[in-house]
Length: 242
Image 1 (cartoon, rainbow, N blue to C red):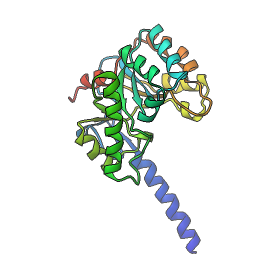
Image 2 (spheres, rainbow, N blue to C red):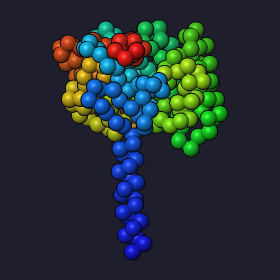
Image 3 (cartoon, rainbow, N blue to C red):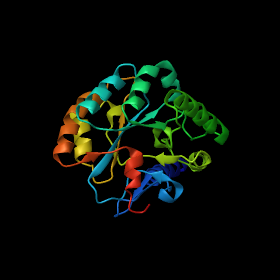
Image 4 (cartoon, one colour):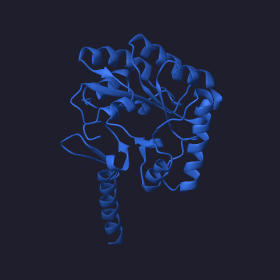
């Protein structure tokens, strides 16, 4: 009997966690783990303009990041890169190129540290360390922070507020991290994107992925559909509620 009750509890708890992660309202205003725009947490922008923001996490990477930059340049697209401090130290050249070509830079911690089971001081030390690296190479500090894995709790919100960061999550997960095929990634984007969407991609993954190939499918199709590409900060500035 105890085992039955335990299983029932586990199922209920799992469902509760799933529903807690993301709530979407009819007006496309999203909250993440119960946090929303009032907490400076954004996963989209409410706008009538046909604009979207492409974002890339976990870089820079010595070979993948340059390939992505080549494609973005080919289609005259600006994106936002949420970088890891440790990877900037290891591969400064693609990072410098990213900033020099006009792409927006966001903080993604120094070592991909999540807020879950993390003390506020430890998270803030990582934010400060990465901010310092970014500022040293670009001359300015980022204004955006994406928590690794998208995990958002009170520690995340308070730490971001201490540094005047806006927390950026996403509307469309391409699932490139799950070894999704280029076609599958494209379908995830084209089937779910809407005005004001923030699209999650990666320019650093340790296992095989098809982000580069998918971009060659996605970008011309989105352009054909009439979408314009902006940085996350530009997207947020267009939000009707700001």
